[in-house]
Amino acid sequence: MASEPGDANAMRSARGWIALLVIAVACVAARLLVARSLDGTLLLGWQADAAAWRLGAVASGAAAGAALALSGLLLQSMLRNPLASPFVLGLSGGAQAAMALAALLAWKAGGQVSPAASMVVGCAGSVLALLLCIAFGRSRERGLDPVSLVLAGVVVAAMLGALATLCEWMLPPPERAAVHAWGLGRVPEAPPAALLTTLLLVLGCSAVAAWCGGRALDAMQLSDDEARSVGVPLVGMRWSIVLGASALAAAATALCGPLAFVGLVAPHAARGLLGGAHRRTVPATLLAGASLLVLADATRAIIPVEGGRLPVGVVCALAGGPAFLILLRRGAAGAWRA
Amino acid sequence: MTLQVHDMSIRMGAFELGPVTMAFEPGRVHGVVGPNASGKTTLVRGLCGLQPIQSGAVTLAGVPVHAMRADERAARIAFVPQRPVMPPALRVGEVVALGRLRMRHDPLAVEQSLRQVGLLERQRDIADALSAGQAHRVAVARMLAQLAPTTQLIVLDEPTASLDPAWSAAVGQVARACADRGCVVVVATHDFGFLGACCDQALLMADGAVRQAGPVASVANPESLSALFGAPFAWAQGIATQPVAMPRW
Image (cartoon, rainbow over all chains, first blue to last red):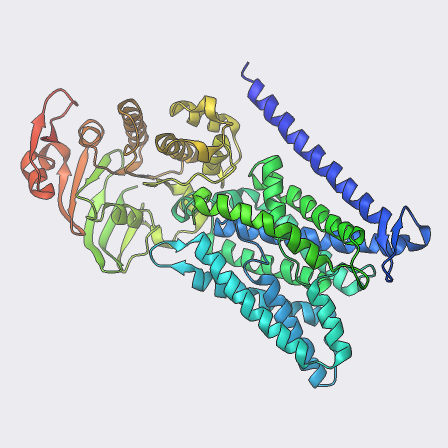
């Protein structure tokens, strides 16, 4: 009798993993079998001559989705806030603004920004955005209030979005068009090798660190006093997460542009299927984030729009917005305390 | 293994505590009592290094607690807060296992700790769905799981505030057992039954200062408690092995 609850939990966990894997395979299959040509024609089925492009899109989407999801999970755990995500807290916007500014300054100087430099600049923009949110979302009486933090994120993201738009507007038409398309969000079918490699490197290091520190991440969700009393070096952990989450958001943004809500929804989906322990949630979140963005990219191909192809950022926002509103009603009611 | 406090003062906004100078002996349970906002929580947080101090020093067996690294503090000091937080989506057993974050994972130690607080059968339940009293018992279980031969100080902040009488007595036995294994045990409490039944020493606090300290029977008498709380107290018989002053209604 004593082993029954344990067996039930193992069964539930196994069902969660199987569900995640089946969803991931289905999302990849959908992206490989569905495409839309530049003139807007829907292409169904496997096409050998387009395989490299479609596999490139799957690699880009999976890597960027996993990075955004892990960034969201780390932020939610550090801030004890179910509404935290790289987009909501302005990390994606910070990276976008910094990269657009770097592109403008480089154009003025007659040069171009290398992918590595773009990512470093984007990471700095993300860190700055997150620190601004934390500074303005904290009150002396209530600490980091979840709703205040999100409101601060909305304002910071709006200001950084305006900065990015200004930089884009000051560029000449060819560069402006490229920055504009990137700003709408797109999953590249032929990702630049340097960007994809850097993203995979940042993702790999962050994922291993998050999995190894999974129990410390669990403990960070206790109160500060409790976390410190069981041995969590809070200051060091928080700085590591600020840098890690920012680097992940910046690397994903450099490749795919600012994408909304993937980093918010994926950790909740992973927790819903496999519980809250980070040793399980970290890999599950990576899988869920990768699946979500690949699915969004496949959906983009299915929906016909005037003038060619729907930007994937639009799909993410349309699908993720309602999820955010549902979480706002549930989470802000006090499920998680800051 | 004495906990020595020398000229410790703490400032939190307009509130000031101290300076406090005193020694907490191992093998004894020290009860800290005083009115609301008298500084009990600030004092006990200062004792275990969780609250920064403005001046003075707190040393445990000669080691300054405010200079300890996180893992060293976890090895020497265990703490149960006034309002424990249960992380979302974690199970009760997983929350208790966090007490062994800096030690080898030991499911048997976790089960044993949960058994002591009567929550073994709830170990696979989601922790943040528990009642306040059960959450407090989970925090006590986590403290028990954290205990190691290196543990020297145990601090409990109002551990019985949400508990029924049976579990208050059980937590008292836990505190007593920790003292018997040679730890310094400090308990902030409003529970005078707990004070009389489980504590050897009493500290009376008011307005951020320690007014009196000494054996419970001599310090926590009706006169001093009446003066401290501004409410009548009287000796109660048959509650504990030593005389206990209780509020008179």
